Length: 145
Image (cartoon, rainbow, N blue to C red; front, side, top):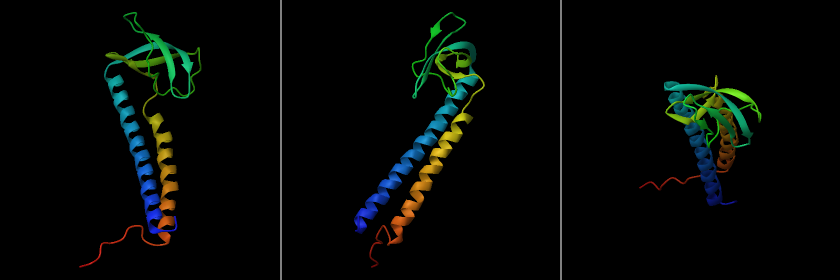
């Protein structure tokens, strides 16, 4: 990577990765806000049993007032601290009972992990870009006419 092309390619790769991570984090915040908004507009309440807890989702089972049993395929929103077999109060969207969150929790729970991810990403990428630029410009200016 001694040449300008290698440094330039690495700088572009770092920017693409950091920008992609930033975009995904911001998108997740808006998705959480949208889910909370739909639950808040048509809120139903139920007691749910935690069926399984895994890294990527926590599956619950609950019954709505019409005696339908729901097991949301994508799990419950904001599941931190739940354990298998636990009974927990949930809030769900009455029009879409698969959109369900633990009662009392909202999108603010996503801000710390996503904010930390953004911070760490740019704390790593920023100095790396600065270091790459130390030994000369990364992009050549077009010749003056």
